[in-house]
Length: 91
Image (tube, rainbow, N blue to C red; front, side, top):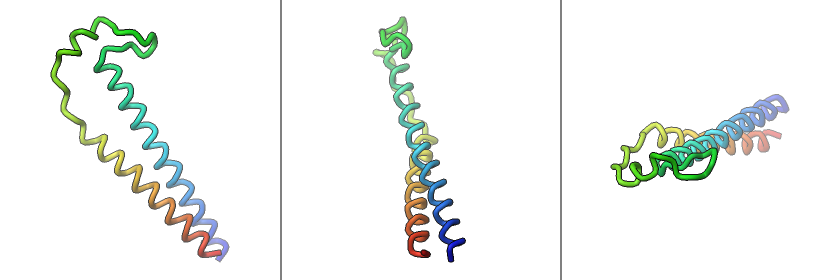
């Protein structure tokens, strides 16, 4: 039973790690995209030459891959929590 518990804890830890990492990376990408859309240079925090042109432009369509990645992150977090729970119950 100890082997089952160790495997469940290991799988749960991996799922929690990759789920949290996926959510963090999506938030960072979204922040960078917002800065680019506003014309703010991330290195200097000042509006660049694109700042005025980007303010009057149309919004780009949403990328459905972002939604899939967010869902994948939440599913990995839920699966990780279940693995840790089953690992605790197996002890």
